[in-house]
Each structure stands twice: as C-alpha cells, then as structure tokens.
Amino acid sequence: QVQLVESGGGLVQAGGSLRLSCAASGRTFSSYAMGWFRQSPGKEREFVAAINWGGGNTYSADSVEGRFTISRDNAKNTVYLQMNSLKPEDTAVYYCAAAGRYGPGVSEAWEYEYWGQGTQVTVSS
Image (cartoon, rainbow, N blue to C red; front, side, top):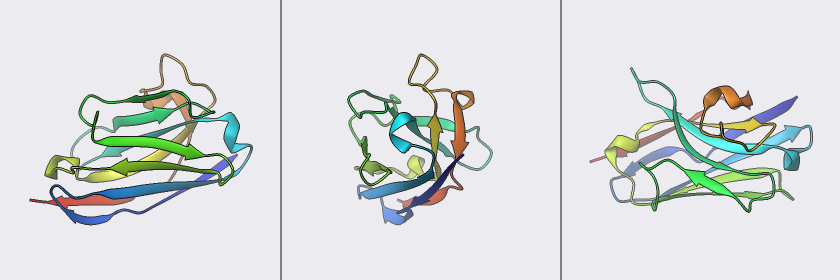
C-alpha cells in the first residue's frame, strides 16, 4: 500500500502561482511513477502531468505545458507540481497518484493504483 496526501492548494488570482506537494508513505516511493490529475465539477478527471521513478522523464498535458512543472524528491518521498501563470480554467481539485510503471498509459487514470484525497485549487479572474 501507498498512502498519498496532497497539500498546497488554495485561492489565487489569475496569473499567480501555487506549488502543490504530495507526500507518500508506505511502500517504496521511488519505485513508483507519479502523476497529477485534476477534476472540476461536472467534468471527468483530467491528466495534468507525470514523472517517472527517477525524475528523468516527465510528460505534461498540452493545456499546462510551459506553465506547470512536475518534479519529485525521492529522499523526501514527495512529488511536486509547480503551477505558474494560473488561469481560471485551472480551477479544480488536484489529485496525485502512484503507478507501478511509467509507460504508454501514463496519462490514463486506470494506470494508477493509488490516489490521494485531493486538494482544491481555485483561480479567480
């Protein structure tokens, strides 16, 4: 089992920045690929970004490319999502998730075994 706890969400004005953190406990964190997803009311859960176990490979959705950066610190069992130039359409509950592999399905929710409880990000215009 892997337990994931997100933090760092909040209310920010458009154009601002937030840094989300996801702390992991349980089984070896460094053996998992990690991803961030988001979900806003009435919409399906949407892939945001993913990172492989070592941090050397990342992949981001087109909608956040160039604005959001995923990173990880395996010594701290934590994955981060730095969000810059935030837009009102980025408003959502953000979830981190852990997958047993970093493969072709890395942007698909079904690839991920463990999920956090989510943290709310609200961007005002």
